Image (cartoon, rainbow, N blue to C red; front, side, top):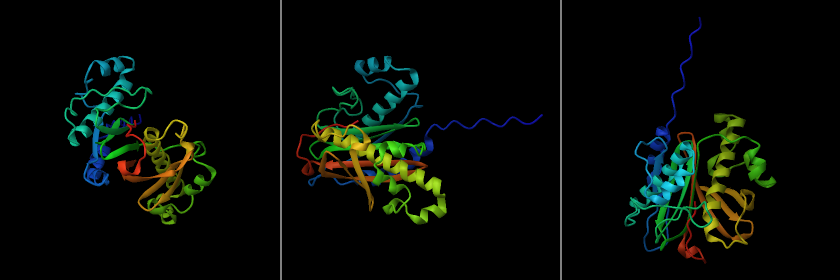
Length: 269
């Protein structure tokens, strides 16, 4: 009788969280408006036993979800509260964080802006003072994307980035290390994630007629240190999106300084 292969160990996200903690100083060094202000990174996992709603609204929101989705929701709120506490927001560690009126962006305490992302049981969140930061966007992608996703989120010109020169995050030399398919997937995931981060930041900054409604509504190109992204309906506002890899996952983020925005601060989810 052949031996039964052992079951794969459950990935609880510990390795990714450890790698993200190592990246935290880099993320939190992202400059905000002159005069101070701090960008902070919060982390949580859906397997943490102490995850709890912070108040009746969060409890009600959890009641409408299946258990796994509820834990994903709670991990995101925990990550946001940890980012708020690191930013020095009074009561940030215990603040209840419901949704904005649009039903999908988190509503942070007055005086703060933030953004969050979930992937594979890991939640990441950014927070900053609204007096210094007009908008934030963050995205984490732990899992490979199918190549077909490129046709859904990238324009024809942007699809050329998957096989061509790719700035600081890849290029011809990458093929010798990863192989063509792996390098292409890596680039696709970076582009997808960077568009997600830009979408979150732009949604809170732009009026409805100019907001992108899909990721195709965002134009993107590689630049040193990450990507330049803009809404196709508002090309004058260009965001720099940072990108780093952490234990096989890609993390992207962008912070829009108040001085660079001409509309009220927003909160992006």
